[in-house]
Amino acid sequence: MRVIVRSVLCAGLVAAGTACDRGGGEPSRVRTVGGFRTPESVKWYEAQDVYLVSNINGNPGEKDNNGSISRMMANGSVEYQFIAGGKNGVTLNAPKGMALVGDTLWVADIDEVRVFHASTGAPLGTVGIPGSLFLNDVVAAPDGALYISDTGIRIGAGGIEHPGPDRIYRIARDRQVSVALEGHMLNGPNGVAWDRDGDRLVVVSFAGNSLLSWKPGDTGPAVIGTGAGQFDGVEVVDGAVWVSSWADSSVYRYAGGEGTKLIKGVPTPADIGYDAKRNRLLVPSFAGNTVEVWQLR
Image 1 (cartoon, rainbow, N blue to C red):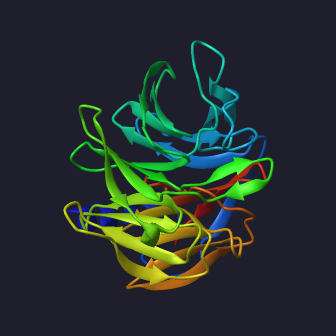
Image 2: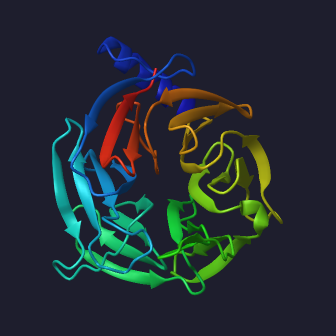
């Protein structure tokens, strides 16, 4: 069914004069939008056809309540303070990865996961993650559970420390928290994505150079690819795994375990997003305070 849907979508895009990703060709940059404050993650919210952008606005590990979520339109216009820490009853310190379940937005925030109404921005609660140190990315599985990476680092005056442990947490539908994965093999887990075709979680590590996959019930993850390392964001598009790398300011497309560098020259590319309506990859530049929009072929 997904193949049929993608074929119909591609036909429509081509008819409209827009290229479509069938696995070949280099992406082209559509636009670069500035004005963000340490943007870490971008998520396409289909219901309103907007891009939600998390802004750390300072130290990624500091509880300063000055983080925010911006709402960016497909044409590049931005509402920078759609959700803002310290306003309208919102607490938001250093928001990073995000997941959408219907109209509910889940946001990783150091050692808690904040919950908001995606359309109105109203706060809906907080889920504490006991034992967590540096929550980084969030993804929703088809069964309604959420998986959250903990990179296991601490950022202080002396720089970055990695005391660990490296973990993937699970939040069940009833908001009960458990540890799904733990171990050195995760190597500073950063981005997480759900591969629906493979029915598996995909994890990329910042401290290592591996792409990992794991199915609930398995004893541990499996390596499905290696590359430049310092991986941050990950998205699965039609079976291909797109991964951003700080090591060489690039975004790679992995298919069959082999990676191809297709987007280049984006400094500190963080947690990428995907716009399925327009077949576009959304790349936040953590240090550049921009979001780049790339058209896939």
